[in-house]
Image: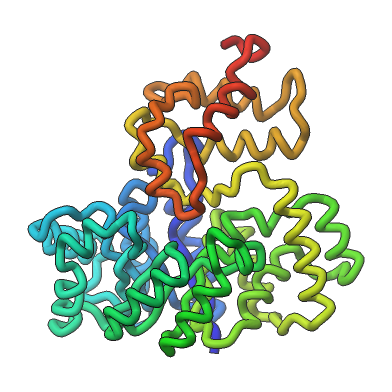
Length: 378
């Protein structure tokens, strides 16, 4: 049976300029609503919210509910590990941040070519297996943004992995870069239960272009746009958990309502989703899901995810002499210590970090051309 999970990657914040300013009061409300409706799976990770996602989980869940009432999934940050000596301190810190004695689910985080220093040069898999033997991990798995061939190889090398966390949504299903369908089929071949991340693709599938929304509403006026994305994933076999990264109590209410009334897609709806996917792909300029992995690694301190959001919305409107998103970019540029798009040194670190395989430095050049103009005071 498919379960709904609360992803704690994009929590509500009090200050839009400070990703660490978690709105704990609203998170408490979201957690209460989630638990009241019979759900109890929470997903966090070491780097989320600049390290405060795990803390938020402790404050809003562990300190407010008995341990037997919830399950928590966390991840070993392979991309941050270069030495064996880092493993024990990071794992111990995660237990402390989360306020638990064990993890119900623990993952090798984004096993891929990008993170190979953390699992090839360092024997992280043996470390995680040892922690499972010692009782600190109940179920051990992996997450990945790699392609299907890579996933097949890693699951062959490590058959002890009990489950996988994959990026699956209708937009990425047949995408040549993401390979959602192929990765899904590989996981099934290895008989691994599948947890799903990015079911709404960072919000893209909750706010589709007007042309796409019209097609959906003509077929079913009462169905929300979100429901199409949720039903697509829930209609797949061998899915055990669908993570939804709600950023507000309203989003949490909608996700719960849609999930509790979910029904499988029919043949006509699959055809509509194919048409909608074509429309969305023709409208998206930058395929960014705001995961912020690139932001954490940028030496110029450019908030790439944030300015890509401005840029995408500007392109959807059509470039104008002045726009609210250009104005938002100007306001961003006035913040202390932030880097502009034009500050990019093209070091390439962000490309390695990006699960969506975006050539970030090239896009930043166009962002600079779009916003850093005389019209905006640059």
